Image 1 (cartoon, rainbow over the protein chains, first blue to last red):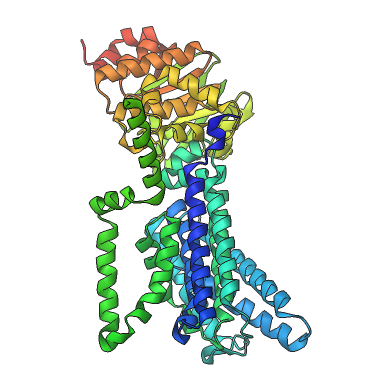
Image 2 (tube, rainbow over the protein chains, first blue to last red):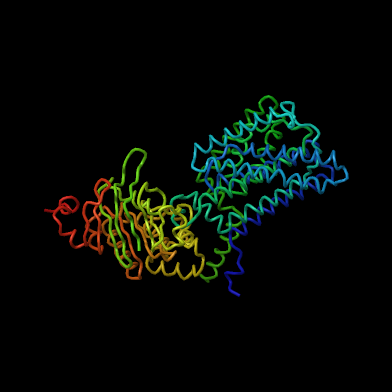
Length: 338
Length: 233
């Protein structure tokens, strides 16, 4: 066997580290809950963290890898939230004998699929648009959808949808985060992922080597919307009431903030930033009135820091993957010198 | 091999290409020359499916490709090196070349090796991010990438654009090498002298029309061409 085959590719190592981060987070939190050191407040943040991570990672697929700006991620999430919520409510009322372990996954799948369908529809509409124009259309789509949901009867209208069974749990959330990471990381690594990134770098050049732009745009938009839908289902099964107002453009922007903060095109960044954005307002709770002000300032400072090339280089030096690699090559060259 | 018949292309109200017809036979190097705005790139975009002609036909190896989508042409054996060195800036040199074999995906290592033999500079820089290459190296990469699909017809859109004269010579030498390997070449150039010196035949475009045609030698000797493009008397 050749040595190159044994050695893991750098991207594989990076992906494994992402799984390890999520697993470690799960273990630490579980231990804290078991030993009773987790506050009620902390526990209430766990599912929202998973929701945010799924949203950020799936939006990063569109922004970071396809290179298009979508401002309608919260809308796809709301499709999942309402689809899953209504379906679970229906099953719980009509077929109470069906266990949660069946009901919830069915709702997750339904929410994801309907999200994907809408993702594909929006993509077909905006196929010829790029950049700012595409962003505005996705923004408008979100606002239209929100008004429709408020004015429909079966969604509970402006008062919101009540009585969705609270099936979501931290364990479900973490499993879904794993699935999201698994699917998106493997897609990005594959030949198809390369084609998607080629489209981002240069659409004309990508077409000139035979990449079908329409097909990949559709795949990316529907897959991203699928996971947004799944995140929505998780969200709706975590709260007792679901209101359409939650999924406005501010929420889409918040997801965008997570992606930008974590680094466009960095999946690990999205995971960490997603969790951070959920926890930050809670961590700042003791500041009371100044909470949102400090939150904004922290965001600005973090943006400046994460976009600074010098700091990035410094961070890259201590990136665990590079660190191991560098110290290995250093040792090697030392040996050679001797 | 490639036959363009009576195409008319419009940009909105602007009639950019007027009744253009030309042919490229197997094994030839054919040049389209003309000043800025003559319609050279528009014709290439129409052939490669990025623009559509209102009339006429474009046939490639006997098959009508007038309505074929751009990405479907590569598997048919037509590779296009677009104007302005359109490479994948955020990928490495090697990844760019791998993208060239996107529709094929076999014997990749061999093909990459053959590209490196033509362009030793690319081998030196194979793990470098393509965006950090110099202009000449980017042009080499774009051409190498197109060769990865083993095209029967290679379309080159202004390969000499923005390059120093010594690099231009190098690029044209490579074009000749590709031609010797059996690739038919359609070359669009502003650098009329260079283009005519390697072309078997050439077409001269002016404001969207073919105004002159002949062998490379003939056109190079023609007074009209000398006045308009070569700057001599």
